[in-house]
Image 1: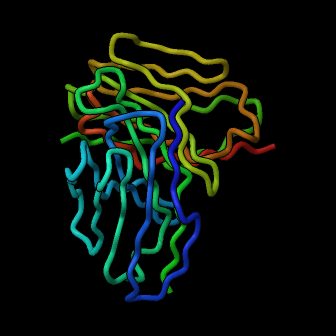
Image 2: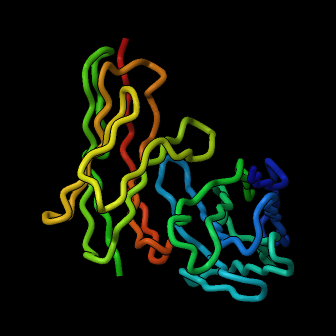
Amino acid sequence: SQTIHQWPATLVQPVGSPLSLECTVEGTSNPNLYWYRQAAGRGLQLLFYSVGIGQISSEVPQNLSASRPQDRQFILSSKKLLLSDSGFYLCAWSGGQGALGQETQYFGPGTRLLVL
Amino acid sequence: GENVEQHPSTLSVQEGDSAVIKCTYSDSASNYFPWYKQELGKRPQLIIDIRSNVGEKKDQRIAVTLNKTAKHFSLHITETQPEDSAVYFCAASNNYGQNFVFGPGTRLSVLP
């Protein structure tokens, strides 16, 4: 069965510091991968999605970036964090590109980020 | 692109009563409609989904109905229990997971 991991689970960082969040998926190949951010009490904001290694699409302009160095690894980064970057960061995966009937997204446990 | 609206934003019901959450979508190419439940501090989890080739799907106390002509779908929870309290998100996408868009969410509170 498929499993999705995220780390760290929680993170407290000062404004202006760098960020690296990691997401890995097990038990599947060629997944679509997604990064979402959820502010407290709010909905799911899609930040990035990837359909393959090195293929990243950005949904919103921001000081964040994403990379996919391996098929089942997705990394969210920032060079300098802002206060507004605080939130709950969720990674998700779904079936590979063009995979009919595999469109369901499954979420990782999330990383709670507090920028002070 | 796809746009998904969800109503109400908050809903309070007495334990044992039914709860209904409605979503509308804009893209007629959307064919897949999942519902997620997010408990406080946890990840969203899929609870039920429906594809455009059926009009209704049930799983114990939860059911989803779809009206493709009107472009809306609804989540029905019967005999609500306190553990049903959570935020519920609907979503819409096409069959290949492209243009997967979430609604803004509904906070359901089941009062004892």
